[in-house]
Length: 323
Ligand code: CUA
Image (cartoon, rainbow, N blue to C red; front, side, top):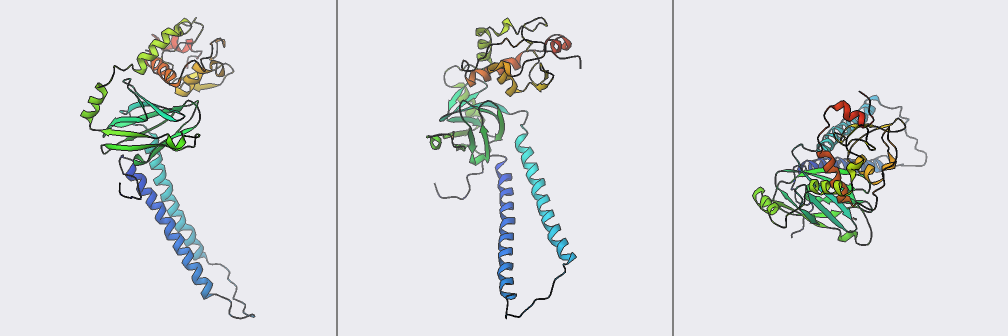
């Protein structure tokens, strides 16, 4: 491969990020050269010529002060507005994105598609379609970095981080771990394979019959007898799970939290951390018994549960008032 200063530009965001990077680089370059040149010129032009020389005092210049305040202000406003636009474009996940779960583990990347296909250190995606990555780690902090997409996100144990990309050119692109994670950090690499949609469909259809996270979640939910307590009645030992994801949950002690994926994960692994108001901390911990993929599967299943008949009933079952 011939030497190139930049990785390939292969996502919808990559060009935007490069233009901003070049702008920042140009501003830095212009000021560095300009200031150095003026510094050298003044050093020569205003050097001390003899021992008794006393320069005239300067009492300031309003015009000069305005110029060197307003010009940097305008430049930094451009930097701020542009960077903010980029930031929001990167954090807002398109609604039609394909979801892929990413689990970092020393020293590999485990990826799972919602249709069930599992991959290690390889991610197959269709060209031109947004892909939503939901990532976590089984051990230490890793960082999922695809230079060709100008996309990098930490995979942090104990929480879910999200990002997305839309690949624009079919091909194979490097995945790196961008957070030092131990001896084989440098070998924690992989490949994103961007395919034409028809090839992607073919790839999805090939291989052994996959088990989707939803199906796995349903199986685990039954195996672990979750419904013994979470059967969705207001008299149950555990709060109803129907309609729970995304809602506000009132906790014992008065605080309230949003039931996002990170909360659901915590409530499965360390249930005593945030107990729902009106319930006893009787749920056993599943830390060490369920892997990250199992937890993600259970969350997918809980999200698929239909809301209970009568929203008021389900809110009451979760310890919420009638707001
Ligand atoms: Cu994983 Cu560095």
